[in-house]
Image 1: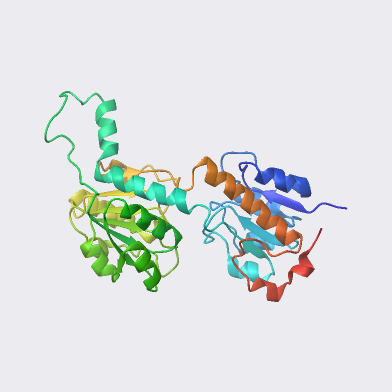
Image 2: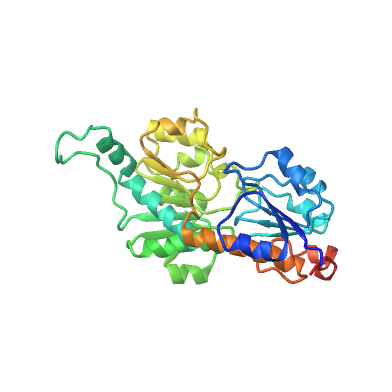
Amino acid sequence: MIKPRVYVTRRTLQPGLELLSSRCEVTVHQGEEPPSREELIRNIRGKDGLLCMLTDRIDSEVIGAAPSLKVISSFSVGVDHIDTAEATRRGIYVTYTPGVLTQATADLAFTLMMAAARRISEADRYVRNGEWKIGWSPTMLLGEEAYGKTLGIVGLGRIGSAVAERALGFRMKVLYHSRTRSPEKEKKLNAEYRSLDDLLKESDFVSLHIPFTEKTRQIIDRQKLGLMKKNAVLINTSRGQVVDEDALAEALEKGWIAGAGLDVYSTEPLPADSPLLKLKNTVLSPHIGSATHQTRSLMSEITAKNLLAVLKGEEPPYLFNPEVKEIRPLSEIKVF
């Protein structure tokens, strides 16, 4: 029996590649850098499946280069890098990895919050650069306490809820804003609903956990930043495009807010001329929300299982576009 052909745009952790290789003929891009657009289009031709990363732009041109493509399995919780409408129109199943990175990303959000509040990046540089000349001083690197403060969560989904759970241990008052209210979560997490403006006005810490869409593009802009407290800290582990970075840099430089902890940016990697790099009151990490051995290994396994399930004509564990089944039933896709 001829094995289905699969293209993987970056080496992933095991057991994902082992699972794919046991059933498919697999081509893997070997470099640390993502494949060029030309390489992506060249290698996707003739393939039955694609396992891609969030850094791969899978638009109509890429999809059109692979008429035999049946499934796109994304190593991510978001799918804004994929033209899902075009994929659905062509009967291509799009899968993803929701839920698996919840705890790791919530850990990082809380880490960024604490690091920004206590000026950990500044303190680290202070020691490493030889600036620590006095053993102890009552005014050296004063920060803000998190215990008992107010945390505003924008987007109370899986990750936002996990952050709220961590806040309970710090006796924080939890406010949230989401598209819809959730009385069940309010009771479980002791959280109070607020409009976005009121949340920004009341919170000492604001943590963003919303998907990137046209409606959320730069939802935190100059006007919204102006509503925040001067001692407030903004945390973003969702998508960089939901924040107006120029306005944020201005807010941090002029003291409209006290600090920011960022893991995501509108352009990644962060450009060398970004004003954020020059600011002392920022904690910057390179999009590592899910970067734990446990989470990345599980993501690898899930992406492989999603892809293989579709090729076996079975419902994948995490299907993003279920409407595709009406266009191209799984029975028509089954190849083994």
